[in-house]
Image 1 (cartoon, one colour):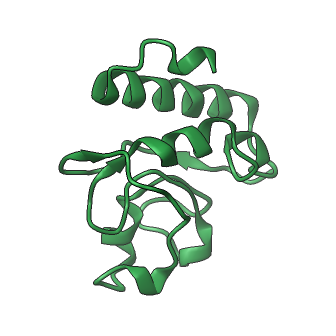
Image 2 (tube, one colour):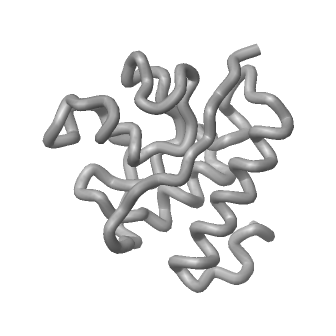
Length: 114
């Protein structure tokens, strides 16, 4: 089983813009430590060994927490439930963090119920 590490993303501001999963070239840096701040999980810790170790992006490349990314990470086909080999405890912690981020920054009291 992969031992994913969860961490709080770093962001400045929020957005409800359309969302598509970012690729490494979408960022103005290739410093994986900086890029990792946009993601919730890493298979190799923070900073990650490779970009592909990062899972569940929720902050867009411009540094804003994205409401649609949170929704995708919570329940989308590329969400927390689709991360292969994820420990049940880490999955529960990740879902809780997603709920907290949405509720704290987007005034979505029912986000966890979706």
